[in-house]
Length: 389
Ligand SMILES: COc1cccc(CC(=N)NC(=O)c2cccnc2OC2CCNCC2)c1
Image (cartoon, rainbow, N blue to C red; front, side):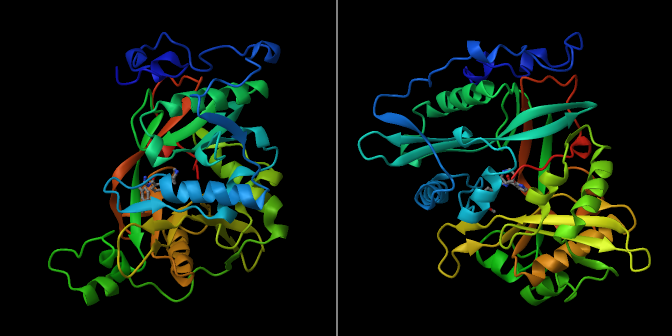
């Protein structure tokens, strides 16, 4: 059947939807780590497991090249995510990471990397329960090895290695519907460089719109409008951590960030993540925060351009500055940094600014999943406070 593999896994099953007799929480209990399968799962004969040391220049370049040529494309196969090497190193080495969760599959004879899957540890709160989970990401099988059923054995192997660290839940997203989404989000795009977006086919010229009218429509001020708006700096970590913890507490599912997490995930890192805050000129209190991460896409088959420079909305907190004004400043900073487009999901309070800031709906959805954790009912995107890379 359609979900041959997922029907064998401890995930919400479609047949259980609406069965409110099933309790919220773990689906299967933990087992003693000594009872976890000690040896790796079997791969088809020609292939072997390799643990990818992302600190190795050579290995991180191999991972970068595999993803650059074989990772997720948009529905029309016009663009492919092109995560940079620096971004991958950042995304995969947060505080407390496990090298063993950076899993590659290579060809025994040539040692060529042909598949990849990763996990990183994260403390995620679900309602009032903080659960240590694995965030699973970057599942990629070389285009030439698709439909060999490699993905199920890779998912089982990363699950086994997560269990060996006595962690029993996971979180992941996908553009496809699997058993069973905890939430389904719509993605939105805000043009920053409309001429390039139209030229590469990302956007289309609106009806009864000229190019010059379109450029004018998306024009932004040269610099941010909010008094006290500035780049985040290391000394801001304690205040940003307090602000973010308080703000995220309103969502049903959200990361439980401490100062070490904020230092890693939210301190600005050139060409990886940008973050800004509003410091009140009078009281020097930090009242608001916004951030976006850098994820370019390769443009497949365009004469004039090879890369789409895209910013992705990350974590934003508004307590004094209206979110609309704060996000307009984020757009202004992204334009200043020469991004072509600013993407956002309709999670958290994002829906309140999308249309007014001239975002247009994307042509797909992003589904969120939990592994081995049942929610009594699916969440509205506004109840979701988790953004995965
Ligand atoms: C424009 O280039 C693309 C290249 C590949 C895929 C897509 C469409 C798409 N699937 N977009 C998203 O998943 C997306 C849209 C808005 C915000 N975050 C997103 O995904 C993030 C989070 C999940 N992991 C990928 C990056 C677009």
